[in-house]
Length: 299
Ligand code: ATP
Ligand code: MG
Image (cartoon, rainbow, N blue to C red):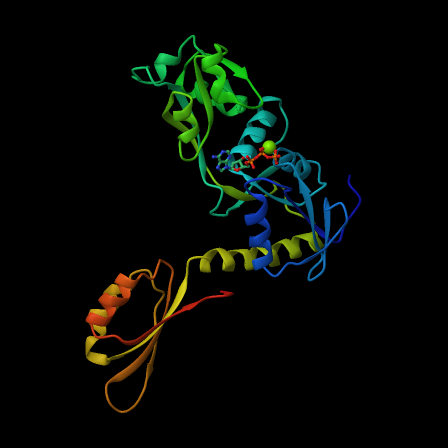
């Protein structure tokens, strides 16, 4: 029951870990915006796709309410709020559309360094501090463990030292914060990364078409993110030696150079093209190796 819109609206984090990479990814899909003065709303110029800059926690709710169509948010936040909706008897309303490959971290259970960790049973009757109560509650239920969930909105890692909790469940990337607080991660509840979130139900026709267009560009951008175009020459007889050295390449394009056995090859490689790989190819008979960046791709 929101008024019909013919522009697509995407919510991203205003500032924080996901803000810059989210914007860069959308820019690589050809989107550009005219900044508004308050920078909460950015009007799309190249396409009718506007940005809303918000706190990451608000993104799933904005999609659920139909205020925004899509959002870029951590899977941890999306699942937490999704579980919370289920517990409260609300329909799903949003879901993960694409994993985006940045903002990687995990939701982990951590206990004081001194604990001799045997397994989740050890948590029975303990207090666990977290900002992810729905995810933790769900996990505890799956493990069949009765523990007390202590909800803290921040600084979860100092709760054990303050005597507020016995263990914690928090986001971890390097583990340095845990170590600094004499805690150790013992089990992972969830592997997270930034995701494109969208509504559980299809969008209406106009915005659906815009979203499809964006998804096609996004898939292209994600595919070529680590891709390089490799150009080289080789004689036909060394081809059997060369091709096994390109396991992550799409079927190379092969062009005949002259009446001899000389070929020019071009291969799109999806893995890292390192110096070592180039040297191996050269040893196997490749000549004139050249590595080029890939700017765009539409399959
Ligand atoms: P906001 O002001 O938008 O609410 P925030 O403080 O909740 O910001 P950030 O700390 O910027 O959020 O984290 C955003 C997301 O980045 C997290 O939800 C998570 O998906 C991801 N992330 C990646 N690594 C980490 C990490 N080490 N700690 C916390 N979040 C991480
Ligand atoms: Mg937040």
